Amino acid sequence: MSALSLRLPESIHRHIRDIAKKEGVSINQFISSAVSEKISALMTEDYLKERAKRAKGGDFRKILAKVPSRKPVIGDEL
Image (cartoon, rainbow, N blue to C red; front, side, top):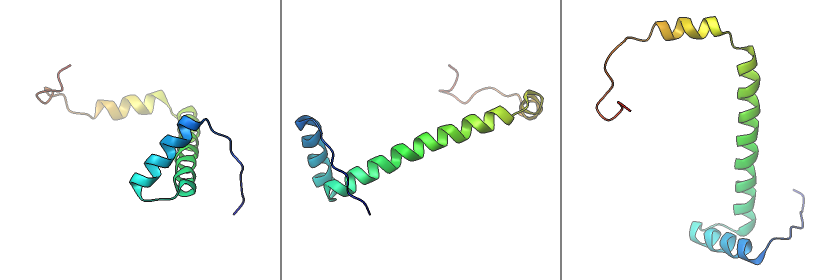
């Protein structure tokens, strides 16, 4: 593990403290989890962008052509 000194506005620190307490975790655990979630989201976005570059429009259209044509479920019309 490594240590990181972080300066936060008091309002953000107060929110973190309150949420961590409500969740039953330490402030360090809360921040570590939040940073991990952000890293995961960014890495997923990068992965999907790279995958999209390799996609072939023709293959996508072939897959869509296999989807049966039917009326939408009630509530999904819009």
